[in-house]
Amino acid sequence: MSPDPGAIPSAREALRPVAVRATIASMLFSSTAAVALTVILGLQVYDITKNKLDLGWLGLAEFLPSAFLVLVSGSIADRLDRRVIVAVSGVVEAVIVFGLGLYARGSNLSVVPIYLGVVCFGIARALGSPALRSLIPAAAATPQAVPRVVGMSSAGWQIGAIVGPLIGAFAYKQSTNLAYSIVAVLYVASVVAIMAVPMTVGRSHLGERSENKPTLRHALEGLTVVRRSPILLGAISLDLFAVLLGGAVALLPAIADERNWDKSAVGILRAAGGLGGAAVTFYLAARPLQRNIGRSLLVAVGVFGAATIAFGLSTSVAVAAISIFVLNAGDSISVFVRSTLVPVVTPADQQGRVLAVESVFVGASNELGAFESGVAAQAFGTVPAVVAGGLATLGIVVIWWLIFPALRDVDRFHDVLPKP
Image (cartoon, rainbow, N blue to C red; front, side, top):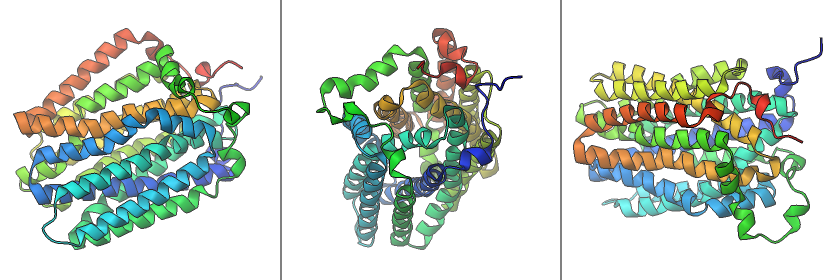
């Protein structure tokens, strides 16, 4: 019997390349830092202003740089050594976080310098994110290994999603400056890890086209590729609208305050989400989805919406933790499918630009979703805003099921590989 050309290699085989191990390590450190920083910023801003809308502005400040730089960041990732881009981005992120820690040592703090620091941080992240995302499939030894490598890199991210909130919340209770310093060190560790990726992997996408001068047409190719592919457009836009409307987790500081929960509850609830995501992610790293990929994506987003409604109606930390656990479990399936589909469908020399577009959509769903949640909570109250967001997410799933049959009917990742 001839081997199945779509068969996914074992975890041991997928982990053999140094590039895979180094990329996963960098993802682990950077995700831990990013999630911890989100918790720290949310707690500090809410402590300063006690205004739920300011949590929304915080999300907007994180999102805008990736939106404005989408054409530049993707083109850079497709023309330069991706390792170097990620490393420089990580160094800049560490410096900015360290600066935020120094500012936090003062008295009579204002949120304006914090927002400015977040915008600068967002610029560095916007430039580095497409390059890091592009390194993940490039590190895999074969195209068939990409789902396994994506699953393991997602597992690294999920470990960070568990550890990061606990580090952020508990370190913040001890010292704001200490919390920021830990995050800065984690970013430095991510830089050290990414530089262990061989140069050949960081430059594997470069060819004769990289020697040409950048053009607007080159920068716009990412948008063109997404627009022309129903699978890419459906998968990316599904995440945008579903999580944009269901981004309730950004309101955790306000929810904890309204329900008289201890500040540590914010860290515990975020960690519960990390555990839910990790449980699914580690399972998918060991046993990646092989069939019914499109339907699994849509059902997972539906689970996300239903769990968002349960979270909005919860009145105890325990029920909220279970809801967030399920919410992140559904989201992790969605992330795994989308994170595998996008690089698999996209040719290697265009991945930076396409992933830059995806980063804006994902950023819109997370950071802009945080802004939307803050505005809705301020206008209508926390519970109505969260529940309405969950219901809207379920509606999006039904609509996408009907209007994107190409996405719904994807069976195996191997079926959508670009034709040579």
